[in-house]
Image (cartoon, rainbow, N blue to C red; front, side):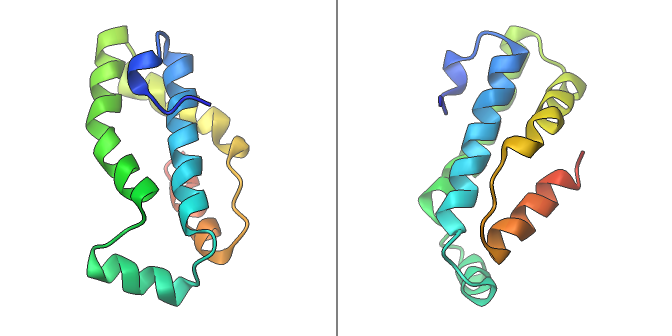
Length: 103
């Protein structure tokens, strides 16, 4: 499952990369309690996969522009894939709800 925006050559592939990055971020916090997550977030020290997702935003947007994906196209394709995300803990569920809330 690719997490490299540069490897995507279509809007569909870029949506898959985005979902893979989101899943990595969800998985990285799945063993935390809500209180632990809030403490970590308040301290600004997020797990590496969450930080990576944050920093990949610009790369995802740049790649979308290069391959001709509009924001609306990308959002629609990501929302169509939202059911692929797995969230096994309370923190992960909260993150997933936040993502799904944008669809």
